[in-house]
Amino acid sequence: MKRIGIGLLSCILIVSCSEDQSDGLSAIDSSGLVGTNMKLIAIDSFTVSMATFKIDSLAQYSNRILAGRYLDPDFGVVETKSYLSFYPLDYDIDENTVFDSIVLNLPYDGYFYNDTLKRQKLVIREVTEAIKPAHNQTFFYNTSVLPAGDVVGEKSFLPRISKDSLTIKLSDAFGQDLFGRMANDQINEVEQFRERYKGFQIAADPSDDAAIVGYNLSGTYMRLYFSDASGTDDASRYVDFKYTSVNGLPAAFNSFLFDRTGTLLSALSGNELELPTQQTQKKAYMQAGSGIVVKVAIPHIRTIRYLNDGNGVIYSATLTIGVKWDNARSLPGYVNVYIGNANNRLNNPVLENGELLAVPFTKINGEFNEYELNIPMKTYLKALLNNPNLENHGLLLVPHYMDATVSRALFVGPEITQKTKLRLVYAIFN
Image 1 (tube, rainbow, N blue to C red):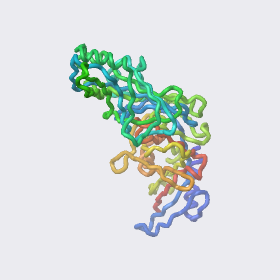
Image 2: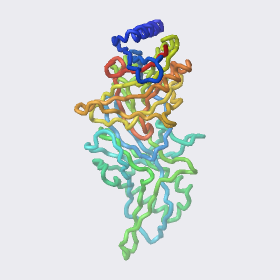
Image 3: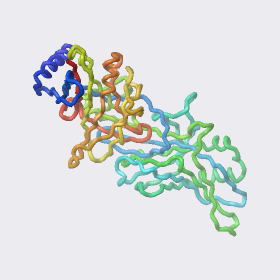
Image 4: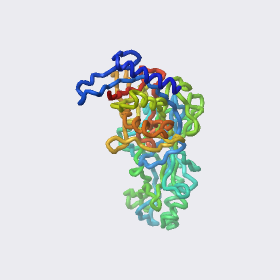
């Protein structure tokens, strides 16, 4: 393969001198450049390779509750469960009051994925272990899970994202138990409360095929209603229980669950395994939450050093990747770009103007909703030419808000060259 790459560049040099525009190579008008000894050559025939792989685990820092479940034709079963704990910051319940009801209020935060026109069902269970990061950790991962016990509430509903919130009535038995312990001073300290009421798991019904919906964590609360036992005062009173961290550590997280059985991604297990586009019907896959990302490599780019005896530089470079969009599921807002290490871990972010490179999806055909990614490659390719250790690392394309959404995208593999290719302009000096 290396001999082919070197041979190709020899042809480029010959072609550039004759200004022939065959084979994807052409000379560019350089008359406007300062100096007369520079010539620009356009090259779009470099080999591009793409593969799909899965990052083992993703740290979570989001203020979003994600709950729901749906079936994706390309990614399989997509499901999220949320875990969170509550504590009453202030309350006054005397013995002359009686329990009325208890509810969980989840404010919509505007995010949803898949079909919100389908009815879905959320089930609330008490967790049986404290919601806290693992030993010596300060955060949760997308793969974190906790055991859950009794169902304390459920609701079937149609999401109304434009409304303020979703209210779920919790069981009277749960509310009576909580009310009695607080009214009788059996619970009056933080640790006592957390020891008995460790928190909730919020999950979709296992038969749902609807949507995943986002709720605002900091605005979520459980509300306990009670009233005067004598009936002389008919005013209803309540105590709010809100999410709080514990000793500065988070006490809430989202668990992402996926069943890819029967899909082209069924073989994905961890970052040791890559699925090249030749094995996935000329497609590469990306999905937030699951850690599924795209790896891109330009295996023969270093052979460009043989062009004109090394007397040249990369003038500009853009990698264009075609996007397969089914019009039913929104694309991620942006794609962030990293340089992976040898173990396919997010290593060094690619920066632009000092910030993480964020590449938007560009609509190229409004009538057919066709999109593409146009990734600036000049900085990365220059680094690759100067550092041979980067040659096998590749670029990792990661969806924006990786830890807080399930947005996904399918990309056209480099086998379909009219959709996906590297376009490079090389400046040579005579």
